[in-house]
Image: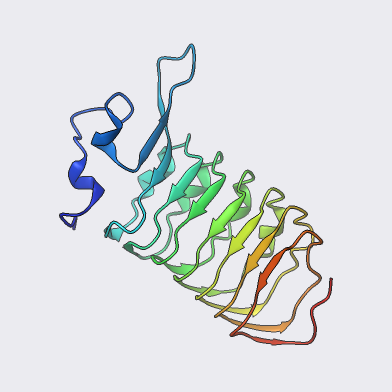
Length: 196
């Protein structure tokens, strides 16, 4: 279902989104490499525009994407595994949409700097492999149904913001990265003291 206020109603699918005026494809950004006649979609920013339904697996074919923002729509189901093919992503913000668990394959997106999956209905544990994302500066997983213990994020030397509040996390907090400036853990079932 595409509501009348949706960006999609402004898109003219008879044209290439990278070869037409930006006003025809609101929410899409393209790159135009010098010496290369092929342009690529590098960002999808479709926040709070009322999309409904499921995110199609075809999203994994947009391999030049560096930014994927779908905040505050009404997407249902889990995030397609094909997103693991988007190895140029630096920012992914999907809050207020999806269900399921946090993707076990997220560690493959080595260039990620920011992850926002707040306000979804994510359940299960936080994958320990997130600690392989060495460029990560922001990790926001607030307002979900995540449970079990928090894995160690100490190896994430660039991590500045860690938001895990309003989940069902248990146990003590592992040692934190030294560069952390913001930490949100309220409304969980954690015990013990914060160690640095």
